[in-house]
Image (cartoon, rainbow, N blue to C red):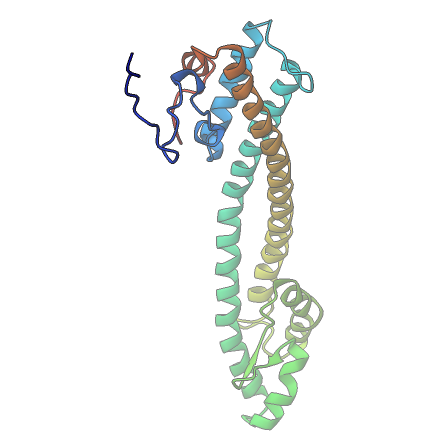
Length: 242
């Protein structure tokens, strides 16, 4: 009896993968952006709370809820602090511009009081807290903390003692803007610290959130090898990619 002909299998041909062994890629199921990630975390936490059989040995459902809460709170606080910071920073820039404009007039006052003698004027300007500019002329420090000190320690006392103290760009002009500048600078620094703390809190929770979501995906795949795609959708993983 003749042997039946067989078709040889090419050594290089890939072996077809059964549908039930489809690869699950958590990177395509877990959102990268913070907003969608928080929403998926919330949905998974809710689903986990209803499926009492589901367990991870290293993370309870209650612990996961706290991770989601911390992440969402950090995200909200960061947005609120950043939003509050924007108008404060804008006003500081406006005051910086007003200081620069005021200096233009102030230097004219000093020059006039010095008998229009450039050498005498240049010699007096550092006493008003001004620094020699490498491009010529005199300016206030660009660093806001140093600018604040120069205004408080040198410019304000020098203007108050000058014969032009009562003029338009004298004491009242500088004192009013200095007071607002000091207040705003303190608030902006505080908001910057608040944003930094919020980012740190959010990033720590985000790392733990993503790690747990990845474990949930693999656990659902292991428990439902034939229907895991439907399970993933019911748990809140509703998109194939983000």
